[in-house]
Every structure is written in C-alpha cells, then in structure tokens.
Image (cartoon, rainbow, N blue to C red; front, side, top):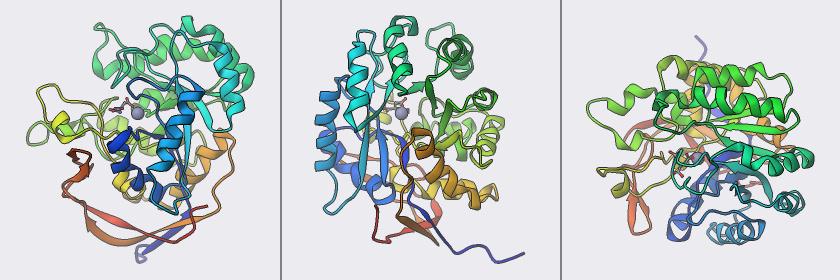
Length: 354
Ligand code: NCD
Ligand code: ZN
C-alpha cells in the first residue's frame, strides 16, 4: 500500500448552495465560508424573502459588510420565486451581473417556504422568460402535501413536477438542489441535454438516516430533504465521485440556533460551513476518490453556471482536528455537523483567494 496523500492543493472551490441568514447570525457564519470558498450561491429564504433584484443588491451589500477584512469572497445572489413575480424581474436578473439564478421553493416544503410556489403552472410566464434569457432555475425538489410520505418527497416531486417541467422547457437550465436519492441521481443522469444538474451536501454523502436515531434522537442531523437510505447515500457518493459534470458541491449549510433545534418542534437545517470542504474530503477519501474532489468542488459548478473557474488554490493537510461542540451564533450558539468528532483534513491558509 502506498502511503496516503498528506497534502491536497487544488483550485479554490465554490459553494453552490448556502444559507447565510442576516444580521448578527450572518456576521457569525460568513467567515467560515469566505475562508474556504471563492464564491457561494446565497439562498434567498430570509424573512421576508429576497424576491427582487433590488432586495438582492441590498442583501449582497450586507453579506459583503459581514466578511472579514481583506476577504475576496464573492456572494452570488438568487431570487426567491413567488407566484406573483413579474417576468420583467427575470430581465433585471439577467442584466444584474450579480444574481445567478432564481430559486423555487414549493410552498410548505422547508424553512421559510411559506411564500413559495403552490403550482409551477402559475409561474409559466417567468419560466418562459428564464428559458429565453438562459437563466438557472434552482429547485428545492420535494413534493409537499399530506398524501406524500416524507421519505418519498423527492421521487414524487420528480415524477409530478420535474419530469413535466423538463419536457415543457427543454432549454431551461435547472439545478436539482441537494439531491438525496438514487431516484434523483438516476433522473439527472437520464437527461442528456446538459441542462439538468444537481448539488450534493456533505451530510447526504457521509450519513444515512440511521444516524438521525443513533442512540437517541439527533436533532442536529435533521435537515430537509431528510437523510435517506444507505443505498441512496451510495448512489450520491457514486455520482459525486464519478467525474460527471452534472454533479457539484452545494453544502446547504443551514444554521439554526441550538435552542431552535433542541426543541419540541425543531427547525430543519445542518450547519456545515465550519468544515465546508473538509467534510467532502472525508467523504471522497472514504470512497477512495480524493483525486475526483477538485472537479466536483471547483470545476463542475462554474462550468454549469458559465462562470470562470477560480484561479487561486486551497490546501488541505492531513492533520486530524477535533470539531468544536459549539460556535457562537448571535445571541445563541450553533452545533456544527460532526460536533466533537474528528476530521482528518485541516484547511491551511494559502493567501490568494482570487
Ligand atoms: C434550510 C434552511 O434552514 O434555510 N433547511 C434545510 O434543512 N436545508 C432550507 C432548505 O434549504 O431546505
Ligand atoms: Zn438550502
């Protein structure tokens, strides 16, 4: 057996799905992402949601103001699709230079999705215009409704909504956000247009649903979409490590205060930005595919979004470290993914983040 690799230097990655929140919570978490990633798609599910380019411009300024001095991090904004959105807003997105897509939350699917979409049919004019302007639609791909079992939501969404959408708008570029099932992976692979891609989170690569109940209920592993079966996890790992350009990194790091998660009705979301690249290195190494990490983390995303690949690099060194149990979070605290556990790869600062 050759000695394991001790150092990994590769093109600086981007996070194509991130929740940064706002105010003092934003101030608490932004530095984690800015240290590792050159860019991130900043999700718009604030309260109230970010539904216009003007609101996205103001939010972007708040994100920039929350970064550590000297940071080169670039927030890529996205708008929250509502049924009332004017197609003219799509033109403003296309001309903005800083909004990279529009995010669709089915109403009731997840945190702050109440203002989301009840029926994609009522967004036809916006979707039409997005296709014309070649803008990316980011989809939270879960069916809602009491008739759908929580573990079937992704598969049912694909059957009822995504498959017809792809047929109706064959030129629309779509990211199936945080894909979690073998069915989702198979759907993306079956599209040969190059227009449908998917992001994959670290928790869905590392854990299956048993982890949420191991030794008791683990509220910090509750996220949406839920962790799935081991067979789903293996399908995701295969997709992420297969060098298929349709799969790329999106942490879905979604911080919630500890008190809001350790509650009789806890919030969905896993915070992973503290180790947003290290966790993927862990998963890729377990799969014997460290050599595939760079393409997944740093190339496939910008290629799909038609943005330049980053020129700077980051370096990970094999220096196991213990993940803190908590991080400060505004007036409260956060319990990160892998809290109190050990990660094998540590980030070394290399200066340039351009
Ligand atoms: C996200 C959040 O908290 O904003 N939660 C989650 O479990 N992923 C919302 C989302 O992306 O679904
Ligand atoms: Zn999310």
